[in-house]
Image (cartoon, rainbow, N blue to C red; front, side, top):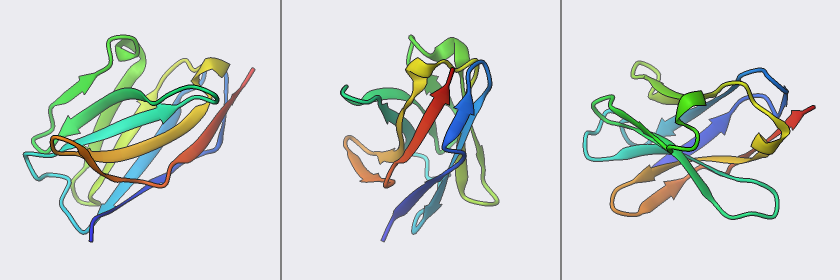
Length: 117
């Protein structure tokens, strides 16, 4: 059974860097045909794709967030990490990690991140 679990601080100050980690169990984050993704949902809004890292380590980001986003991984811990820099209160959202293989088939439970002004 594949499981994903987000972890990280729930409160970040404006202009700082938001950093979240997704721990994968039941699968390997280096499996090449999966895209290991970050998605968020701001309050009262729909889901917004942030980006992903492939099993081979390639990364792709949403154009609207690309300048502030970095996704990396630790293969020894089977984790992948999101860093979102220079955050503002508009980055307040529930952040999810998910596995994509033509569909998002496994999701973490989500973690609330609030950016204080």
